[in-house]
Length: 113
Image (tube, rainbow, N blue to C red; front, side, top):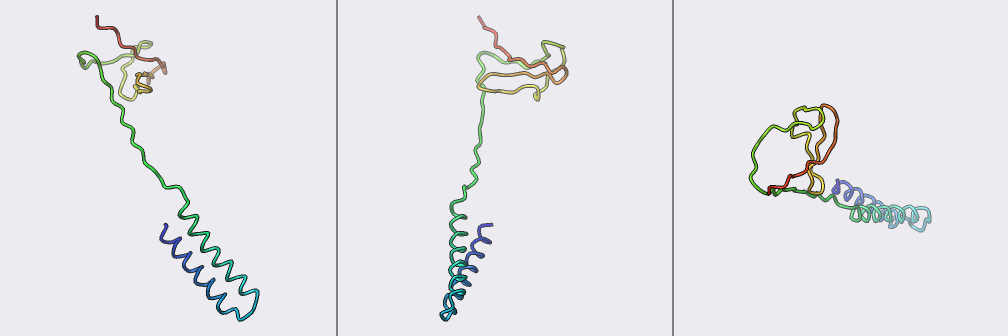
């Protein structure tokens, strides 16, 4: 995309210079040439000033205390089976949203002692 804008700016600049050089004292052609040349400069400026896209990758890791065993999770409200789509991690806390009844709650870790 930038290459197309730069080519357009070069073309505008070229025609701007040609209008000014070939004006032979005609004010209208000088004005048109200056406008074309200024347009080329504006295109280049706007292309360089435009913010670039930045991609940020966020990795969340959960450090669990104690042994972890795999078991089927069930909703506290309706007893429906929860899947990985039901769980979200926000601010280090695990939140559950039941796909069956729509209940939302925070999962709390029980003390091991």
